[in-house]
Length: 125
Image (cartoon, rainbow, N blue to C red; front, side, top):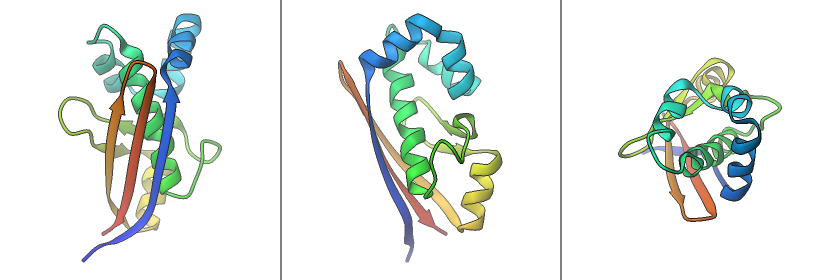
């Protein structure tokens, strides 16, 4: 039997993400996403959908761990692409999960024309 450490949900307006990408794509990508996330998103005609969903997922992961973007860096949380998404943690995010005995982080992503949403459950091992 497992226990839930925390849950998190976040929603992103994809038009906002598109505007940020149009204005300062490389700065936004470098600050918030890993190379794998950027490569995956750029395989598609509208990378904003995938990046927006991953941005929402990172925020949801932070919430499920009981922290926010002031405590954790965006790139310490990586959301994989292709098939069922998974979460990889690095640095302080990884240490926080280990300290709280979080063994598995479940993530679900969805995106439409103008909105992306992510739901996360952090499970104690």
